Structure formats: C-alpha cells, structure tokens
Picture 1 (spheres, helix red, strand yellow):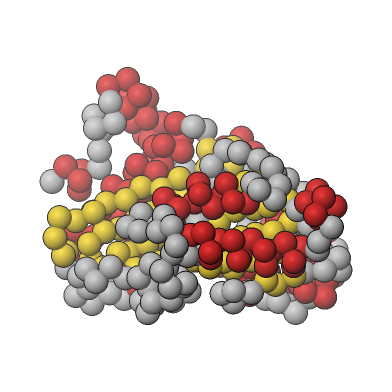
Picture 2 (picture 1 turned 90 degrees about the horizontal axis):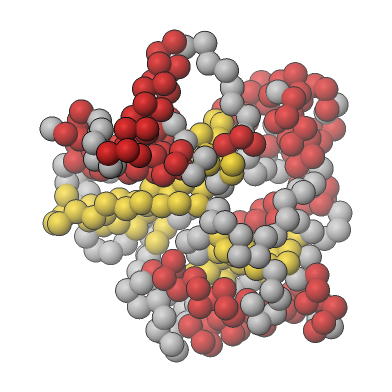
Length: 346
C-alpha cells in the first residue's frame, strides 16, 4: 500500500483550491520548524519522520511525499490507516503540522485519494480501484489536462468508467499510441510508477519577490516571463520536461493563492511555459492586488527523451525552438544573462 502525505503547516491562509483563503492548520507547532520557512523548509524534518516507518520515502516538494508502506505493514503489524493515523499524530505533536493522507495500491490512486481527504483524515482506496474511479470525471486522472479531457468528452468519454470500457485501439486513435495506452491503464487503476527513495526531485521552482507592494500588472507579467525563462532553461540544461505548472501569488497580508494546470504535453519550451503562466495569472482576475511575490513551480519532471512530443506544423514554433537551442548554447558558454527576452531588457 502506498501513502501520499501532504503536509499542512500552521501558516497564514494558503488557498490552493480556489481564492485567497483564511487561516487553518494546527495551532502552534511544538518545535516551530516552519516558522517563517514555509512547507518546503519543513519538508526535510517531515521526511525524516516518515523514514522512521519505512526507508522507501520519495519527496514531492514543496509539501508532500510518497511512502511505500508494504514492508512497514508487515513489520509493525498494523494496517495502512493505522500507520497513517500514527504519522499524523507524530507530525502534529513534534512540528505542529497536520496531514492530508491518501492511501492506495499505487502512487496515482494514493494522490487521487489525498485530494478527497479532508484535514486530519485518511482516504483509503481498496484493492478494487474500479469502484473508486468509475464515476469520476475523466480529468480527475493524472496526466489528463483540459485539452485531452475536452477531446475525450467530444467522443462521449466523459467519465473514467467510460474510458476504462473503451477499446485500447480507440483511445490510441484519439490521443496517440503511447498516451492512449497510459490513459487506458490509468482508467483501470494501473500505475507502474515506483516509489523511488531519495529519488530525483519531481519539481523545480523559481520565485521573484517585489521590494514593495506591487500593483502593476505589467510588472507582474514581466516577473512571470522571467520565471518561465529561468525554469525552461534549467530543465533543458538537465534534459528534463515538466507535466504541469503551478503559480503561487503571495500578497502583502502574507496570504497566498495557488493555481495549477496540467500542460497539453510535457515540455521545457519557455514560450509554452510563459503562455500557461500568463493564463494562470489572468484566471485569478486580480484587481489592484498588492502582490509581494510570485513563484512558478514546474511539476512532474521527467526525462525529455521519455516524453511524447506532438509534431508541430507551425513553422514559427519550430523556428522559436531552434532559436531557443542557440540561446541555450550561448548561455552555457557566456553565462545566463547573455541572452534575455527583449521585454526584460527594457
């Protein structure tokens, strides 16, 4: 059994699901690890706590981890729900951190279960995932973004159950051979991804802080462009691509709003990242918001050679990618600031 543990530090309200929120979490951590440091600063301490139960722990920054409990269940003689409750009690007692925990036979189902679990609870998916998955909308599956979901709905495949019932060949004709097989397996609750102890980071982030409350939307967008350029260059330098992008806006009153979007296809192309970052920002509808910082996080990193890339018939897109390769070589030789977008040089 796999656990997906998302930590909820007692920080000022951070609204991930929608809008600027109001406070929450546990009151007053005993050790005060998170004071002023946020979830990511607290994560190493919490990973060490999970390591007391099993060595098979994979960090999922900034605030979560995957835990393979199969050995721990046999060793401790307790079920996954009991071990999850023990983890929650220790995190709350030692660090003042509550947990949202999902449990399932594989990482995908554990993540999906955690999305439905409320603070202080554990949602367990049993050995028959079809019961859990069948009536859920198709975009509840990992890797199914808006574009793919819209395409599938056009064929009447609007729920996970209908996708699971569709022939593999049909799905492959709709979304492609490789993506079709992955979708077909996920709709049946199959996820072959292992939990990798001390594995490579599954995300990379960059942040821009403003020296004072910033109301100018143009400055916000320039910061987003800079962040997308930085993330894209870093991923391309490591031969990686990301599956999703998360935007966090930090306000003058220390509250935050977070939005995430799955990308149409895994990419490290700066122009594509910038477009998604702008869409996330515009979707917030900020009106004269006093913004103190912006952060972008590229989620679901994978090796570039493992990613399926849809061939483009747009010559402008192909030209932009060739220019990006030239710029990357120049930056590698002369430094990161040698070539920057014109709007950032102004």
